[in-house]
Image (cartoon, rainbow, N blue to C red):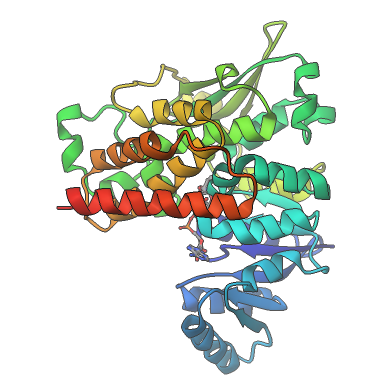
Length: 397
Ligand code: NAD
Ligand code: MG
């Protein structure tokens, strides 16, 4: 029995995780769930999965959750406060933590799991990107196994030889020449450039292949998601960015590829459904059913590829510049982007202002020295957010 904490249980990845878990009651026990504002949803999950704890950061939603659970006769204990998420990640009873909170809010509990040497199922790419080497070192020092949930990184992991899968330092010896990260190109791959400033939040969130939370959906539309994934791949697999290529593949069937020195290219394919990488990471190194249907290649007929358009998607260049700048670059780029996406979703700025905000903040702060520890990461993150906010105030509609 694997005892599991699901951070971000009320989100899209949280739902897919619990769907897979529910298929295997003999293998997984839910120790704790976390949510934020969707208290009714969290209460329903507590009733269904009967975790020992549920954690929400703020006191008022926690009060409402307690009342709902009492009324339902559910004995799950509700924790709140700033440390409650780290508490349910680091508890000695926990074997594995699904890190599926969106954004920087996931850093503290994911890091707490890393420091306790837990198996980390990492969906929350922002936490890794913002803390970079600090996160990687914490996981390595405590012997935490980080299994990527992001479909691209999970695919790469699956295409690597078993003896280097969990160890970026072993990669050079494995004969890997390049990583090929696939990208769908999002909903605006072919939209006339002149119309990009009229894009609405709902249009940006209407991803052609994947159903996801709103923040990552906007990131997919700007392709900042692929930029963050480039940084994520560099951190997880230890390859320099010159050896990580981005290929647009509109069908999202090949989830990514690894090219070897002898010219072999290994790919992982599947229907675009996050339950596949989640099941892979939950059961690793075994395989379990995920509920995802078989891939019907004849029905698909063809798979297409094209290079990404650097004019349409400036965020890809920004991610490369951020990586080249050192560890401060990804941290400030991520912070600026979180603030800009939130402002776009709130209707305060236009779609192209997201990349413009990211670029301005990266140019101002990206060349700072690499943060030495978590306190340094958080200070730089806060400074970048505040600069992004003030720039947004100036250009807000
Ligand atoms: P989502 O918006 O559907 O869910 C986010 C979850 O985080 C919710 O449970 C919410 O309650 C919680 N949360 C939000 N803000 C919080 C805060 N301040 N404190 C505590 N909890 C908070 O997002 P998602 O699509 O499930 O994505 C989650 C993460 O997984 C993101 O980092 C995303 O990039 C990554 N990811 C998602 C997908 C996907 O298919 N959805 C694919 C790859 C990677
Ligand atoms: Mg992805």
